[in-house]
Image 1 (cartoon, rainbow, N blue to C red):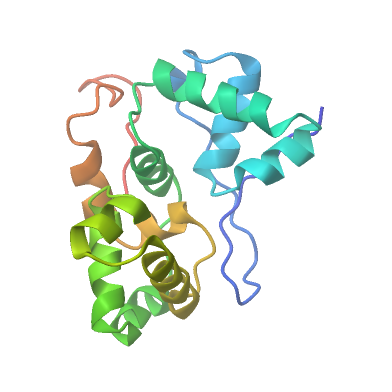
Image 2: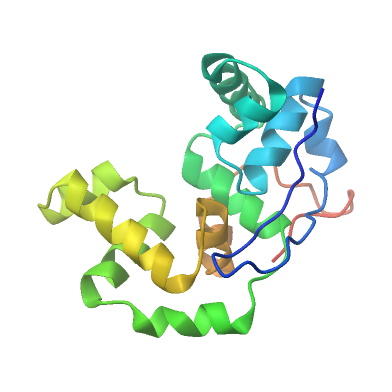
Length: 181
């Protein structure tokens, strides 16, 4: 079995940064395959890439992702991306400074994404088409030099913490290290 290589990279070819493993108290809740899939997802890899690397059908990998998310009590992809952002290294300062380059509508889309809304939810809320909001998301990620949703949440770790504040998976005080960012 080919194990995924966890990394966050930007579109400028910056060297991949290895990410820490899923904390033991979370990893122990998952099967071996679920652990591999979740670690890859938390590092920002796409589901299709994971399926290809594992030589598995996309439906199988998707089902294992859903099962793992249920075991970890992650109720949305946004929570998954927020967790990945908090487990990984912070983004470089030049990426966060680029946020000023965003157009006002892109800022609205970014802020809505960081609160946990999906592209479809944002389109409905703002009275625009899903295609338009999806395009704005792609453009803002391109302007920021980000290539996945985990990196998007790493842009605003405080927002990731807010999204996960009531999540039951956080380690209790006095237990092993908790995800921070």
